[in-house]
Amino acid sequence: MVSVAILGAAGGIGQPLSLLMKLNAHVTKLNLYDIVNVPGVASDISHVATNSAVKSFLGASKLAEAVTGIDLAIIPAGVPRKPGMTRDDLFKINAGIVKGLIEAIAENSPRAFICIISNPVNSTVPIAAEVLKKQGIYDPKRLFGVTTLDVVRASRFVRDIRPNVDAATLRIPVVGGHSGNTIVPLLSLASTPLDLSETQIAELTHRIQFGGDEVVKAKDGAGSATLSMAYAGARFADSLIRAIKGETVVEPTFIALAADPQGAEEYRKLGAGNLEFFAVPVELSSQGVKRIAPLNGDISSGERQAIAVAAEALATNISTGVAFVTPPP
Ligand code: NAD
Ligand code: LMR
Image 1 (tube, protein in one colour):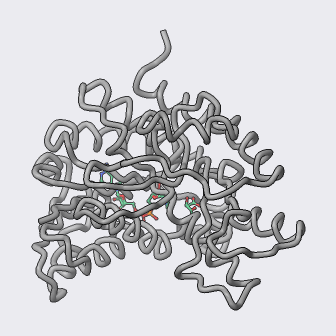
Image 2 (spheres, rainbow, N blue to C red):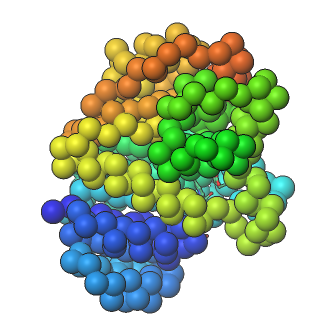
């Protein structure tokens, strides 16, 4: 029995993500919440022949009900980028949206796992943590920024230049955050050795860091990645659900390093320093974060430098998020 709420379910990500979660055999209840159009989305998806019950929740007056009795909330609510914008430009609107949604989850399902897709993830996750702290129910093991799309892009983009690699099973740890140079793919630790030249590493790293911009440009004003994000979001949610059911699953995700202070040490030494949040490979369990997984080897000097660059930008993103909920004295 797993009850899932998708907040922002009528959007570009929300609709295909809701469909993919309807196909997930572990899900028994699917609550779809949005401030527009969600009755049609829920009615449509409810006809798919799987066993879960789909319910529609339209508008702020239905939010509390939508998040009552849930095990997992997935949040793709908020505005997407247009060409020329950075993810940080979304903060003004999305910070308030995420804050309101987390307050409702905190009041009605304080033990729910929370997966945040809304950008800028580097700041919306700290916002969520501050809200949960204020409510006295913060558990860093249960709050996740979804960075799976970076991991998905890393395997897929490698496949473009290594046709013998299986993009579906290749795993490349991606650490740091989720925007431009805060995204640090550790190509040297790919699950299959890739034997890449320095030029290939530089080009792949840049493409993974700016993969989101590729889609924003191609959509030409009609938004950002939705279908690949729905795939990535459903994959992360499925990993978490399988972990809740007892499987051992490792996924990189943007979490508070306090979730596993001992496991975090390796990443702090590699350059995460004193950052409160960092994307790391996480071993998931029924409690959420079981431990921060160790890296399976030494990273390159280029990757170390990239982590240093990421850490500097992340420090600002994190403090902007924290200050939105808890302004400095
Ligand atoms: P969209 O505009 O198509 O959909 C957003 C949905 O959120 C809309 O249906 C809207 O009505 C809804 N919404 C707005 N305010 C709300 C509120 N207060 N409560 C509930 N729902 C609300 O946008 P999209 O393309 O689906 O993108 C959504 C977000 O996901 C954006 O912030 C985007 O930047 C982000 N995103 C993140 C990743 C990632 O890797 N983490 C990838 C792609 C997009
Ligand atoms: C992405 O990586 O595709 C998302 O964060 C959306 C964006 O704004 O690029």
